[in-house]
Length: 492
Image (tube, rainbow, N blue to C red; front, side, top):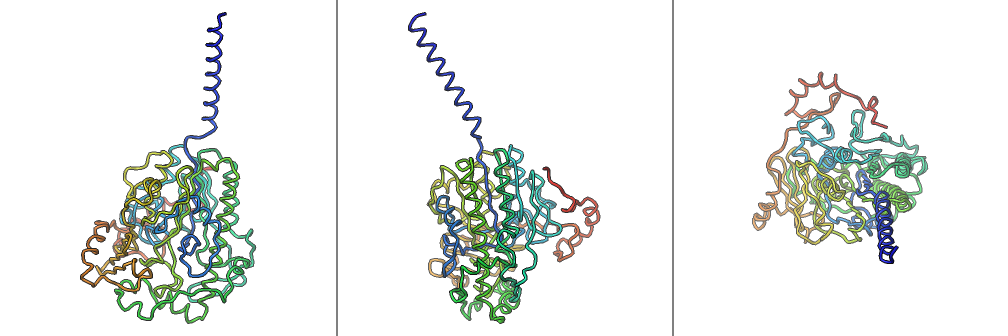
């Protein structure tokens, strides 16, 4: 055999070995990244990385996720209520498209055909595991059947040391951290992470800091009562607010009883304790991911469904169109793409659905209301569209880089210049100098609003008068076809 032939055979042998090694490596590394989507209930901008609280807040784990992901410093919910915000996120369609405006609206039984984010991922090869609060919670609400397994939503039960101030319930819980439902949810999620196949999507829905703010005592100890910073609200705060804004704020129910109780600082202390409890659970998820084989191939999203007032604008709740209710923490960590750079452009979370499908190389439905934020992840300083939040039917706010514009269902308006008035104390809507700005921002308000989606068929609460006749006409048929959550078992 000639020397040349020997060399050629050796080269071919090496090429074959290299090809086998590449094939094996590709087989071990899935083409599609995994997704860990951490959904948190009622978490406002009082995390360390956003600085929404005037005092010190302990959120080291959320902050360290922000240090390696992209923190959207002006992120806003699609609706400042649990159910419509979550339906908008998971369907990629605004309330004005689906008609899901309120807590009673059924996400999977309305006039608009919705293919959820979960169904899209499931159809294209993903394993799905979720638990806790994903959609809304309640006796009728059910989660998406696209999940391979779901840990049902549970609450902690009444705390022995519970207190009350107005509608706010709070107090040191007799349960330990390990006995809390959110802790158990995280433990279950970590177990799924360690025993599932790639590609996967994990969706833990953490309940706290949603009320009741019953939190293990050790988290209260992080916030001595004497250190609590109580937001100040000017006495004339509502002098330039339209009646619709005052009605939604509902001062007599959502503010005055809390202040009259003399327990405002205690309520804020409990909310901060709940934030730090939740931060601990986020830390457990991140630690488990970093210790797993999936750390370099898993996208992490941290999101809250809406913000929460702690006294600002005469309000202790959500469900307003002001900054405190609309602004949320939102972080995306995409390995190889994000590096801890913040994005200061306003965004709303209607864009998360197409962003995740884009990052994972999936085909998204062509009727989504949002667009992929990949360009912002690559260049956070590029121009971007304003953020839109919708509350109930035809109450809308538009948030640009510098302004917040609000238009209520009766046509009344508010306008705030955040360059000078970050706390939104001075309504400029009546000032003719800002007419052009109002016209510009108003163009982003949806032109059409879908009729209210039908409530769950056994719903006993408020039915909007616009759909009363349709609800009664279809109720019996829908009840007959209804599969209650207690009888609904996702595939195992």
